Image (cartoon, rainbow, N blue to C red):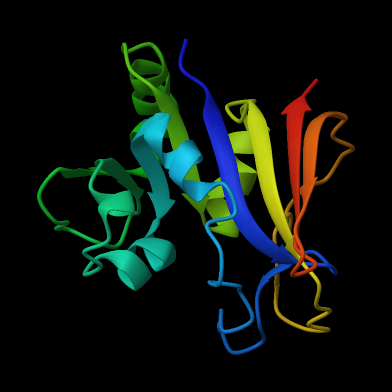
Length: 169
C-alpha cells in the first residue's frame, strides 16, 4: 500500500497560514529537503483552497497526478481529478491500493482532518518555522482525540527552521 505523507510548513504555534490566509512567513531560501521528498512522490492530495492557490503554478513539483478534494469545483486542470465527499472513502482506498510512489498530502487543514479521521495519513513531515503568528489557521483544527506519533528523524537548519519527521503509530 502506498503511503500518504503530510508535508506542510507551520509556525511554532501550529498555524499553517496567517489571519488573512498569508504564507509570506514561509522560508524560500533553501530546499529544506523538498527535492528528495518530491522525487519520492507521484501523486498529490489537495483540498480546494490549496488547489486554487497553486493551480496555475508551473513549478515541476506540481507536475504530478493531482486529486482535488472538493464539492464546489466542477473542473480542474489536466492530469487532475475531483474527489467528492460522497465517494471520499472509496476513492482514497482505490488510490492507496494502486501501484506507485508515495502520496504528498499538500493540505489544507480540513482535508488533513478528514484523512486523519479515517487513518489514511502514514507520516508527517513538518517544517516548523521560527515564528509565532499568534492568529491564523491551525493545522489540526478538528482533531478531537490524541494522536500518538513516533519521531523518526529531525533536521535543524541555520535559518532556525526545524524539519520533523513522524510516523503515526
